[in-house]
Length: 243
Length: 254
Image (spheres, rainbow over the protein chains, first blue to last red):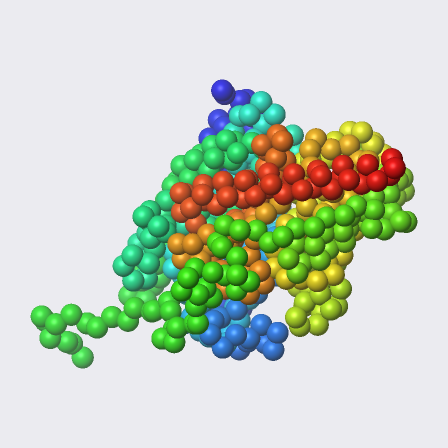
């Protein structure tokens, strides 16, 4: 069931991706991530000494601050902060720096749909840039369901408004990890076949959700490849500078 | 400082776990802190018409989690709001200062209002009240785990009590993941120690999901198992909610 999209993409086609790291000099790590017209800037500060509110003698705390493009932070932004916090907590190895806080500041530059996945990808790239130890990378993607039941990946703002429902999915990037053998097994399956975060909006059938999960996982492989290439480019350029 | 040619340098691999083991949350006989089995929900009690001044209201008690929801409207939208062909839904979730074990801890959950809005939006026929707004105010009187699912279920009942047109009642249940065990309707101490959580809000009669939130790491089979567990529990919860509405109607007729 093919769907004509305003920008001429096929239902499974993602918008062009652009990622640049180390763009801010005062932060410990930073990254900008763009998907089409949607652009987000993320900065990481820390690990720094834990504040009274967030200190934990066993684990590091992660604090997320969401900065909208204009105006004050509202209920939706608070929800985004919570989702981002929980997602980052599940990819960071938090036992290495106990009693510390890592702040992740997310600045929305422009919103043209699929904002939350874009922010998650930016935050993940910024954590890598800051050298925060991670179990694995995370890749996020947005799937939406049309009234006719067709599934579209990476919708724009206009498409999002016309959709019956949409889902933000976050998948683990890899099973190659610093963790001990078998710890990335969830049951009998490797964690790479799993999911880390899923947020839905709008009403959809269970079958629609499972189809979105399949499509999202297939697309996340392409995103993973892009993220890996980006990190490899950065590390090789740094090595050549050092040499 | 070159090392010997044959020897490999020692590498440091960070260990994700601390040496001291946490005391197990579950007993050896696979019972939970409150004595339930893994797939057993807490006893639920619902009542409508708890607030006289509101268009519709409901009180819910699931275990020790106590929630009261009031619905006002449909009433005229604020002048500042643009014209809309469909109705607007305004949701607000607040906690009493004594709701949580530590005073004022409820203010940490500012995202609940947005999540409640998303959960209810898909079930309400907004086209039936254009240019107007329905306000949903939820107050958590006592927090004892799985607060948001209880708030959502109670809000759905309050909307039905207010006579707001809906496709179906909305029921919500959450599941926590501990290693290989799935625990339905977790209490506060279980939520604090969980590896991952899955919350489903659905319309049981239509077998449609209005909100599904997953956090933590889940494999595909585990997600399927968790979803099935939640959907079954939602169907049972919806029956209790329906019987509550029927009781309220029969009482008013008498």
